[in-house]
Image (cartoon, rainbow, N blue to C red; front, side, top):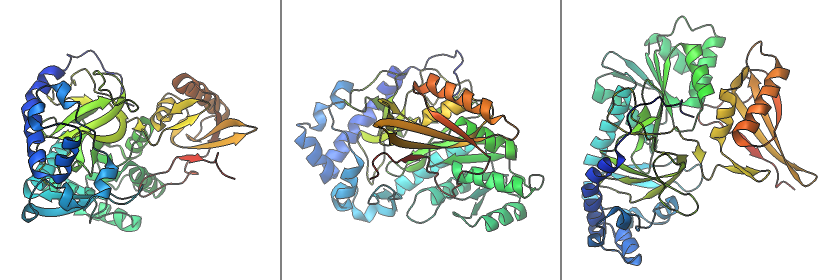
Length: 427
């Protein structure tokens, strides 16, 4: 969860949206004329480009969902001629068939610009050596971070994922100053560095982590072990990739690039557009993307538009850090729970570490939630468990069983860490 916002001026979202509206109208016209998918989709909704005269008209445009991108070939989806497509990326496909996304040269340049902007927000400059641990190939992250690093003029160390021995060897030999990866792998590397007594030998000063939702406790643990500042980068392969937003050194929220993307927050159940400050599902429209522009794409990520400007002075507005995905939430004891709420409870629990597991079972016809939490060294397990139970009740409104386990006893991952185990439907 983002830190409490101090009193700073409000962002004039109405003025910002008015400035974006010409690009939105032009986008609707362009995809209607160039993408068979959107021509058919808008026609089925009884809409033509000239019908979009106001934001209320724009809100009538049907949402685009991931399943549509998966079920149609790119020849039907794309809005640029094949000869202008210079690159293909794809989602990881962890929840189904990979989603294929075509990029034009201008799309690749825009992606690079946004990545460079993100890294600049994190303080990366020409003198840095940037170790890149996300995957290369069809996934956007590795090549995206490398392009942004090179655009800044910093040195890229394109390691790719895994092989921790080689990661640490190169980190020490090349004196890497920036580490990029998933937060789970950032924690894994930090703990390995501490376990091997290498903290005095590393030169890291900055970490940029994304590709998964991660909480304040994990941020604090990585930062404290490595003595670095950490940044939460946001993005989706379907939009461009990681890099459409990042938090700044104030860590009050994620700045997003409103010159490239238009954000709406909608009610996940009704699709109604919600006012600034209300929590809901993030819906994204690309303003200038050419290969596969997206109109009102449902991300499933739960967040909110932050009403206040950031004290860093940036003109870019912010969303809250991601609370979770609407398809990751679980219902227990009649309450819908997002993983980010567990993070919020742990954040204010003395003695609790960042790593946890949620185990859901059904006993005698009733839901049971067991929260396994790593305790910090020298913390009293009994007092920590009691404090954790109180904070879960305060934040989520349910009573949970809490088990405090020793540090590093829960699994670590080089990619994304699985935290919720629902065993209620097992035979």
